Image (cartoon, rainbow, N blue to C red):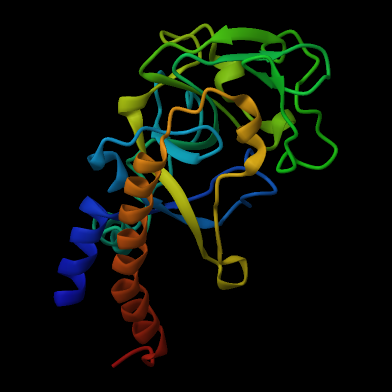
Length: 246
């Protein structure tokens, strides 16, 4: 019972687990990976920053036509307490490319530009061009309004992201209020366990909003979130070691 209460509190205030349903973030994230998302930091006033991998609620029917999973009773309970993703939550995961005030541009197959600075993006899926040459959304120049972010998948040629939703109510932007939190750890499977740091790539973009003081504020809650996961991880391991049946 104590473990369940801890899990519920952690899901609500610290972190929540999400499953990766598609290949849009390869090779950073693989289908079936489960990531832990920091939900605490936004409470301290921090907003998404360039380079972060974030989970956000579907802003304007981006997932139209996608099948909805039908969980069994056990999965429903585990989703409610945060040990598994909830099938009811229509969420996406992408990388933040632009924040309020940024100009993001793709022209031809040249590097992606933020505020006029071409980016070196080592996380882009091997063989992909940073900018798609198709004119259905792959070529664009946008100014991100305050209170919004522009997101793209690391698998650029297999990601229905901001580029391909520019006809929606937000013109492809994601409202900051719809961001659940930042993905900070690949927690499952065990052989894929890793952190998800912000790459140095976005130091090139200039006009960074985050001061050293706010950076310190951001780091502290994430540390608390990781510490908070430990009791649940230990509990899950203990449960797995128990023999099945009675």
